[in-house]
Length: 290
Image 1 (spheres, rainbow, N blue to C red):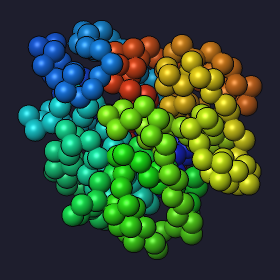
Image 2: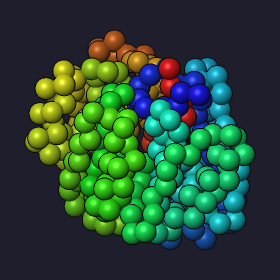
Image 3: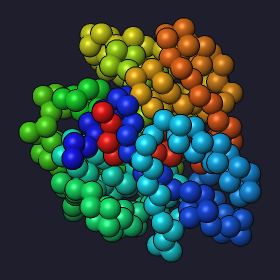
């Protein structure tokens, strides 16, 4: 099977986790939301409604959706399935989150991938920590990794080694302090690829060299305004080239995408995305894109 080394090709198979299995109940949410640094306590029943609308969009475009099961070893953030693994065309690399409260998610994923007969080609070891949200395929042979609070130098060294035969260009992007160590700033917080030559970006937090590199690669940049960045406007999931999903309430970003020839689907993500700072890319782990 050819797995995923793209952020924008047609999504054929994806892993998700339902709030029933991640949030469990309102009582569980009440116990955990501060521990996991949510903006405020999510409403469990409203989260279920939002997620159903989100899944309906996925079901129209993605032939195969796998659901991660519940686990007593993990918490609310396991809803954001993108972070514990990253796929290459040969299979998955198991990561270890830079957010300590999420590190048990890797073991849940290991068993799940084995049960589904999905190949694992490597795993971070020792002091290495990285989140999937810091690892972006610009194209099939160009891998970009954000160096920040969630992904350290040792992880970058190991990832470079594991992917050496798969990539021509391995680019490290230093991430800014921004709102601090406890906040979630990933590389994917500031860039979403929606086609080979189109990306949604938040340039204010982007190093100059990286922004120039994108332009030199012939990638057109859709600039997200400040207020929409705060509403996860830069977090855009491509279901296929120029077919994408965004959190509702980002009209400028949506219009710019439409003007660039994209089809845009929206979902209300106040409970499942905004409060936990995890947009549609975070809620999904692409396994196969064609």
